[in-house]
Image 1: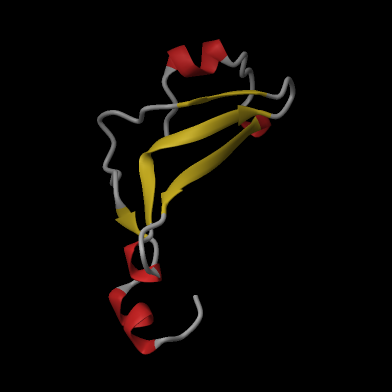
Image 2: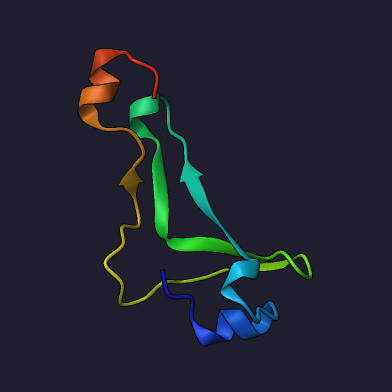
Length: 79
């Protein structure tokens, strides 16, 4: 994903290699309802240990992407 300049500047990120992207998960009542927010990753600058949540606008990403496929959840298999 492309991180906006304001977020890069706010956390002092100089090189892409220094970035760690984390995805926020929303957990519901059961495993089938777990979703990932792909539009708002947390970006950590591993050089200075600062971070911020980025908003990835104008990119083909989902706000609530199911973490597990329906076929996997329905089968009872571990992911």
